[in-house]
Figure 1: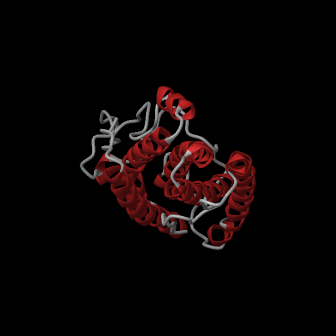
Figure 2: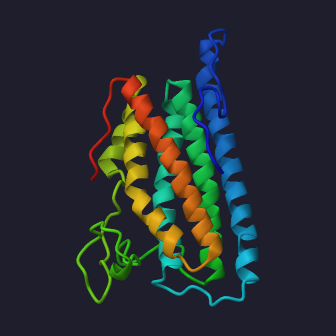
Length: 244
């Protein structure tokens, strides 16, 4: 599930010889095809991901556990990354940015399918309720402040770090030209950085081997992508956004 940000990797590569009028329609068609394929593959992986958990014989993770909380919260986190990447895939001008957006969209949609498959298997809601990150217990604190301590927990938060606001999303949708490239890179870099503590925590503390493995894969992939995005922003003369 590792991704590549090399220019030309992804659904299309522009060429100087391509007829300019055909690019928007080609890009839209490829975006639709890519989304359909990613969603279908994500659901398939979510179904197949049940098999190792069904055969483990271990107790089913319960509400409030690291496994359930991570799958629910990271599903929300991934859904926004998929949405941002779809916007960039349709509007970015830099082929390298479009390639990165395609990689993030398909990779995170597949992972989203896996997490939703686990939640269905565990008979747990697909999405969290009552705040985020309350499953990160203070006894396993990694030094990050996730909220006010209460009954042995770091406390739930109303918003996960790194998430784009509604204003951020509106600005990305309305941006045109090279501004799309820069804003997408800035928002996605912050998004990756904000989700990293959750992924690292789940990779260490989840009870299910499959959940720990997926979380570690996310850590490895997104750290690599964060380096790529940082370098892209530097090349474009732009700076990363501060954490929100």
